[in-house]
Length: 129
Image 1 (cartoon, rainbow, N blue to C red):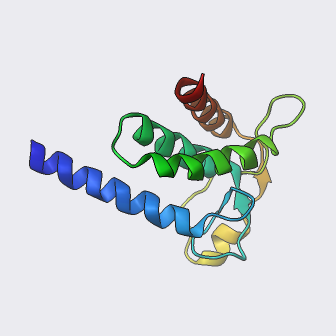
Image 2 (cartoon, rainbow, N blue to C red):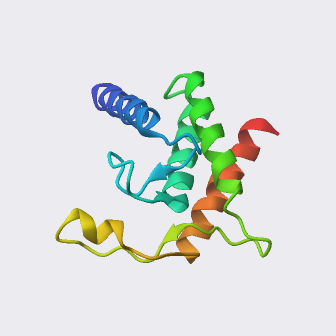
């Protein structure tokens, strides 16, 4: 349905525009997007960058958003260990009762972080090589 598709593309554009506004200078996003005092989290950043790059490739959003994803990738690669693990990844995140719960989740490497990094970097390669 074209109306549904148009609506979903509008929502996607709005979400990416909002993400661009709260991206940290490092390229990563904070675990609580609107709280610059919460820690920077690499797996969510990889997921966002993957989605943005794919949306650019599929022409759902403007090409200018590729800069947001590229900045994220520069931040992500700084958190890949010599062993190839994506560090700065939240340990499993259950449902919390307040924002402090999310601020204190330990950081480590997690399989889902590796998967997000692989998706993101693969989409980057698909777009640029």
